[in-house]
Image: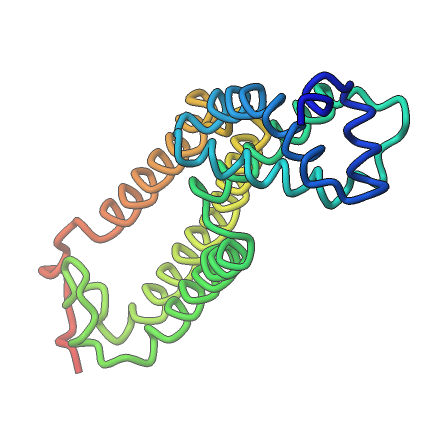
Length: 225
């Protein structure tokens, strides 16, 4: 064991690669554990996660030891693998996994806009008494229903289009956050995306309110049927 402790990294790697020497591998782990753990801890900021990363890194070393080139500098290899593994762990813990994110993206980026468009089309077939808009007696009078329903459809179509564009912005925001080390949201991008979303919704509601706010029921309004 003393011989293993004084051997170079390359010699220990060769011992493990040729003879599956557990003593050689244990010596490598003992020699480089502090480095791997400290690099991992700087990335994940959690002792428990740092231990998980360290275990994963040395497991990778054991699996790939036969693939290492003779001129490989082990400390540099361990540093790169630790950093990459730590980033993956942080992404896994902060963001949803890939399959869940795919479902979320499809539902919010495609499903919700289609739902809004469908609502804009279906509303004209609903009983007028079930449609809650200001000054309903005027705007849903028989001679104005078609114009009102067309406006609602176009208005919801605008909202659906913006919602799809907004979700593209959210996707780019998440992609940019995942490129950071460690992953984190950029505040300028965050406020840019969500600020534009809030601004559009405010304008959308303002246009809708302006359209229906005037009570014109006294101008030859025909009772609803």
